[in-house]
Image (tube, rainbow, N blue to C red):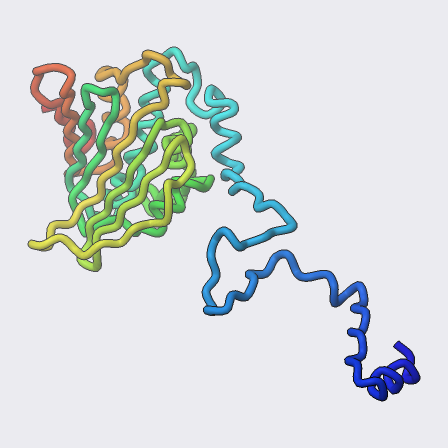
Length: 260
């Protein structure tokens, strides 16, 4: 307002009218928490001018699920599930190459899931969980050469094409757990206190996605041939396959594919 109007208002004992606010001062930021008398903010008071986009899934997971046959071959053959199981064994095979693992145990469950567990000091948790989300998966041969896994037998393929997948790693520095649902992490990696007694191991549990593989189930014959190939160069490493769908004794493969 003009200076003359201010003086006249003061002379007549009136309060001067408030100054008109400009456009910038009138516009309140909509992405800030409003201030309350008690200094506390409530979720219902949050006002956002921009919607929060949903979390974007990993592109590699989306690509694998979009074309699963490109990753594991013919979806109607048991070999497709064998590729998933081989990917779940990646951590055990790594430790076997490094002489940190002498036995690998595979259990085929009645509900169609499978468990791969091996004793040892416990796999690197960060590398394990990265391997479930990223490609490629590099593996070192017994001769010390770095190579890609055969075909697409990698943890990320197993994770992407599983209904659910869980990783549990027990080490002297703690118990690490993580879970994935159709390739997407259910949350951050959880670290718990180490198990009493110093028990250490690495365990991968997964169930092939029934929307991808329908009624397909694991084949012992396929797993036997894969076991022979995987242990061809790993001496003194024992692979035990328990088929809990039947009452037959476990299939045992030792070292260079010698069947017990």
